Length: 187
Length: 102
Image (cartoon, rainbow over all chains, first blue to last red; front, side, top):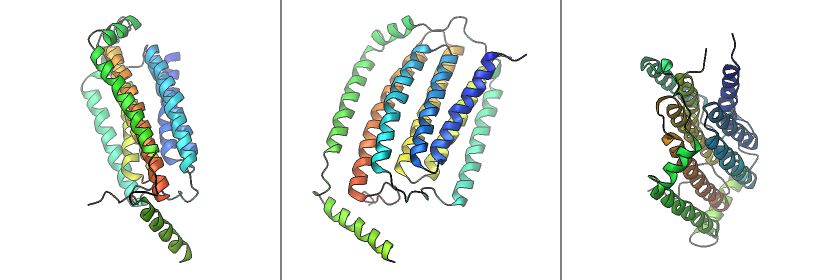
């Protein structure tokens, strides 16, 4: 007998992992950015399956809504057509696939050996109230520090955006880069 | 048959493997950003799954909220760095960015 949850789980797994793979392997990096957004969405839906709707909605808001759009804009700002060869050679890629396959196999076998496939769910899912109590009680200092970190990162990003390539040796580096490219193009 | 804890952990392991593969083989800075975000997502799935199956309180969900906020802050800074690197070098291939090399 096929359960709806099983079907949904398999479909969401395909979306999450397939989106991640296409993010890295799509020929055009802008399609990769779209694949990354799909992967985020699949992971958020897995959170729904795990009875964590608050985190799922937070994930959609922050990742699909903010990070994916930020990534798309950056990709459009820095996109160039000569990026088809942005990977290492085939030997390095095969070696990486074999190593990562061994890593995944060892992780999966350790999950099975630890008896995690027989663990049963908690009777009741954690509630919104529980999240709120932790956020405003025991972990309130963490929340405050996190707010400072966010503010600092925004200030840092603003400071970086004001870097002028014509000062502090930037001009020399830029001229050198242009020379190299033209030299390559002429040869 | 219901979905077991180990199934969620396997999905997380798959995503983790994809992220590590990208970090190891890619040279484009944007693809490296993608890989890091995939790795963070894999870790978040683990937190939520363990929370649902093995712990009655909402501690794992709270940690994931912090993790998502941190990842967003980190993405903002990394993308700013990528844009600056592109403006200075006209390229985001990390094997070409050698200004900090000793």
